[in-house]
Length: 189
Image 1 (cartoon, rainbow, N blue to C red):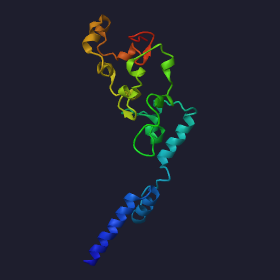
Image 2 (cartoon, rainbow, N blue to C red):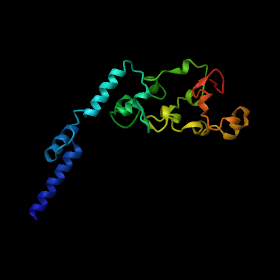
Image 3 (cartoon, rainbow, N blue to C red):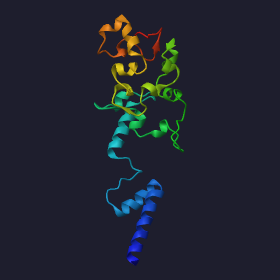
Image 4 (cartoon, rainbow, N blue to C red):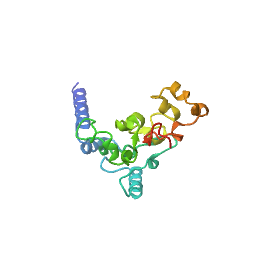
């Protein structure tokens, strides 16, 4: 009975140490008992190679999504690099370090000054209505693909009333329209 109590106490102490300590202490406790525990203070070889390549490719702070695309998904570079602090306040909670869209324009070009008229969502600073901030199966981190993106808000019947749209069944709206804005609505390119 004494052995069982000692075993349970030791087990609870180990669990306490694992879940209540800093990553460094947690690593020390786990690596004492188990082989192959990754050291949180040393980036993996794969991560080191990616960070080195990114630092060579990113001479400026402006980001391109092409760096983090696979055939299945597009990743926002800070998300791919696990750099949550680039957008989120890491001191607590999940709040953003700046309000939208100012946060986006810290890295991406602020095209609002270049366009005389803006799409309503752009003017409202609602970037995440159309773009996912982390990862997407669609290019440019879009939340939907093709016509689904625009027809999510714009009524299909209203769009089809325009005779120009009669023969654009499979085309993406952005082949003719700029989704962010332009000279005059409907923001033709």
